[in-house]
Length: 253
Image 1 (spheres, rainbow, N blue to C red):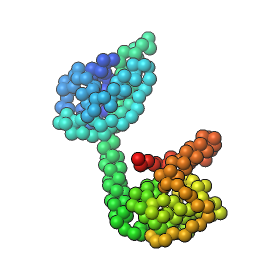
Image 2: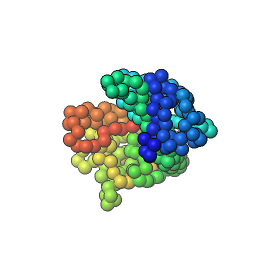
Image 3: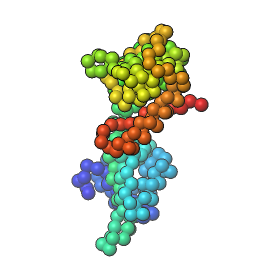
């Protein structure tokens, strides 16, 4: 325990800290074990309510795992991956909890940097008539909602790794006018495009041309419908395709 790289805490059923290892003291910034003796586990967190399951789930003989915002001894917040498990005696009776933590602050800093980069790109895109980018930084649903919120008209294209167009969607004042991907058009083309993804995208403003079956509904509506259809298809297919069917949509009132 003392030589483990993870921060480890042994606590009683009431949450009072009984023992910690050196990694815990270093991670939280405590000088020694006496500084945390009999301290409640709930005192380690920014939001004590968010950490209730960490302490309560092991009492039911189950393991809890999740991410929590912790507070160092000096009040500095930092993110940890936390796991709590029941601590059993020789008879198997639960007598407390064993907790382990990994500092994931750097991971969160990277994610926040990416979020700021995407937000910056989207703010610039709102002011530009034409824009393009990489789909590993921004998702197709995000782009569709950007076009919708900005009320733009034009043609959105998705390209593969070789730069060849794999699908196109036409917009009029932010609403999807039509879509095609190969020989498929209409709503099915939008679903196929979301499922297939791509490497790069390009949006060219102007008067769009209708290609294939017209789609006469809001952009948010077609995204929500596409998400529902994809989820239903994946449930029926099981895990065979190994794909990610999640389509994030922020529905507008």
